[in-house]
Length: 162
Image 1 (cartoon, helix red, strand yellow):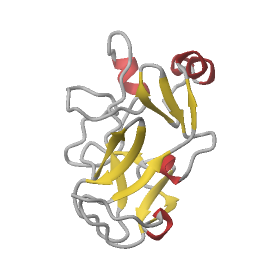
Image 2: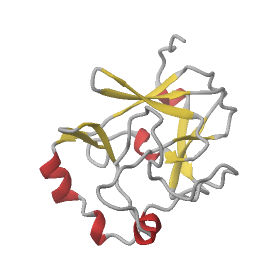
Image 3: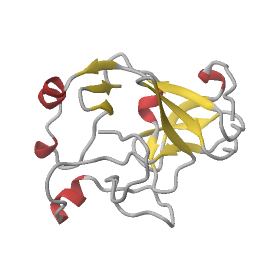
Image 4: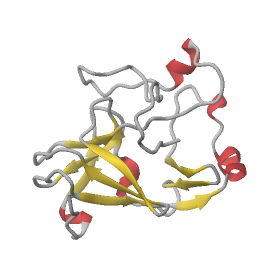
């Protein structure tokens, strides 16, 4: 489906979320297939990513990182836009799409006005997934389909957020 081109500011707004901190909400109805916003920020490599964010030292995971490929990560916390506030859900209404190394958030179903935009982070970790790891990457999306974690538990082909 072709994406309509318009300013994302006409489509979304950031405000308090019941899922986590701040979230992104539809200012008006957003049709399925609409390319809503690009995930932007400073592009960094693995060494800088590890320097900035040490998951092992966090009680609960929180970053604005989005993996593009094995050598490139977008840090939305630096020079980012409102896309960094889109929360995870196990039953999302959006998905991330990689177009030549640029990450876009697109609606996978029609989103009513006032609804929070979400996508599945599909976060990946190295090593064994223990109870402690699951607790660090807890999900509180509230969906009946909630798997209780933002971790990628099965392959579904979407890009992942770190």
